[in-house]
Length: 306
Image 1: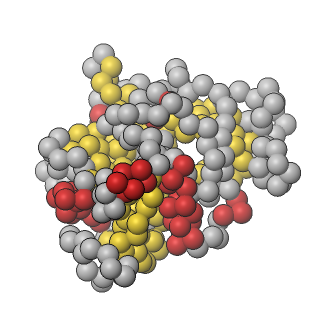
Image 2: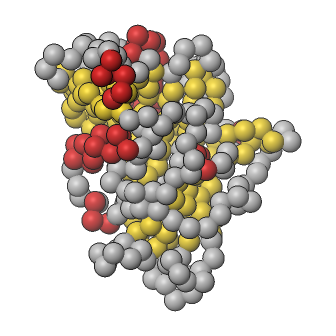
């Protein structure tokens, strides 16, 4: 998984209400070919909740048309002439290239929205996001723990929300309204096995420290983050175009929550509630079996293992 090609602008599907809002991705053919870009729906808000073509659903909270409590505002969409559309600035779009045969040259490329969902809290500094990340074929059977460790290894060189688990995407200019480009070092607090909707997952909670700040104040920590990664039930498919073969890539679902360390517990239950409501093949629920790292501070709000 790496970077990519073609312009997503103008490919956004516009709809009249948040009840029919679509996630749209753009697929391109082989680099250097004349293949055009194809738009493909990934998910939408319907009468019962959010449904993704990757094989999961998130129902609305009872009696509402909301996935999270009203204090959380959706960030990766904007109102335009009374219609909800995906934000398509560079920080909301991620580009990938796939080197399927290992010859050092990309055979396929893919450009998709960075977030399926991204919410910001209206009072504290909490952020909750859900990403759908296509990965290289060779990573299909890679242990989720290993993939999440790869994520942590890449944080020092990228914004922590947009790391792509082993990929090297071409990202646009930094987005100050989301994260600030700084040299960051993750410090693991707890990690362990999890399940989401009956699907095997892996979770980690860590603190982020600005390396330069730590030199001055060794105990300084800017953000606390919890990530949960699992495999989607359905793959990403690049359909054959102009002589190119049909290609299939596995997809990871990466759910994340971050906040200031002092306020971390304030939004953790809402994050877990979103995960608990995710439905895969008719099953929902969340379990976390997290073991604390030696000397790490306690994290409250985690659901017990079932």
